[in-house]
Structures are given as structure tokens and as C-alpha cells.
Figure (spheres, rainbow, N blue to C red):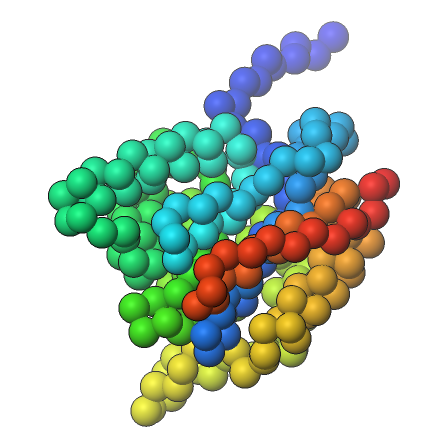
Length: 223
């Protein structure tokens, strides 16, 4: 009889997909609400989107326990910043803070794949996309999580960003209107849900613009 090795991992992958799109004066951040482990669904109604500041929202997939720990750290750091500077952190500043926080834990990383969306100091939409150890980039759109391999090529086809090597540098924001961007996100998730077993149940969409933050929901497949 072959001896079986008992394996234990400090990490799990709870699946789920996040998408963010930046526009000229808005930002759309969306994620599904399914949380799974293996072939089991733990809950069908878990929000992956966290408001970090008035003009800054983070969506995270991966290991939700690590995501929760990361959100607590960012929330505490933001509170200290508010006491010291008497103002809320801007989205680019929060983007750098998130990168530093992830990089600080690079030898035992937060197993979370984040996309940060919001409005910059000029009121333009901005999206920052991350890996688990803090490498980040400002982009016009991004997708993270179990459905990212299905959604990213579709977004590339619809919204292809200009190459960062072009001179003079082109703006990363997408040319769509807010309504078009929301419709595109809905289409993305409807398609991804058909093929990815870890994406489904319900879609939560957060829209940031000059008027503030609003949420929309759309039902997805539940199988």
C-alpha cells in the first residue's frame, strides 16, 4: 500500500471574478457574489467589493480570509492618514498604499488578487490592477479572479488600450459612456458565468462619478 502524504495549506482559493473599467469622468467596478471552495458553494451572497475611501473602491478575488485581513489593514492605515492629514486619501495614493502593503508581505503573501477603481485628483476614472505581491499598473480596464482568463480577451477586443510604449503617451481611459460600460460589464459576466463554475449567482456593480457612489445588481446563473 502506498503511503499517503497529509498536506495542509495556509491558503485556499474561493474563486470569483472582478472587473473594473475607467471612463473619462466615471469608474465602474463589478464582481460576482459567489464564494466557493473546491466543488462546494459556501455562500451565494458575499460581496467582494470594499469601499476604501469616498472616491476609491477595491474588488478582490482569491482567498477571502486574506482579503478580509488586507481590508482591515488598509482601513486602519487610511484612518491614521485621515487623522494626520485631515482629508481622505486620493485613489492614486491608495493605489500606492495597497502596493506597499502587499509587497511588505511578499514572503508570506496575502493570497488576494485586487483591482482598485476610483476617481483621480482631476476627476478622471482610474483603475489599478495588482498581483499578489504588490506589482501594480494604472490601466483603462482590468479583470482579476477565476473568470479573468475568459473576460480579459473580450475586454481587449472591445476596449483595447493604446500601447504604453507610444509617444506621446495616450490616455488609458476607455471611450465608452457610463451606461455603455455598465452594459459591457453585464455582458462580460453573463458570458463568464456560462463557462466558469466559480462565477455566478449575482453581479454587484459599483459606479463612481462626480455625484458619488451607486450600486446596481443583476442576477446570474445559479448552477
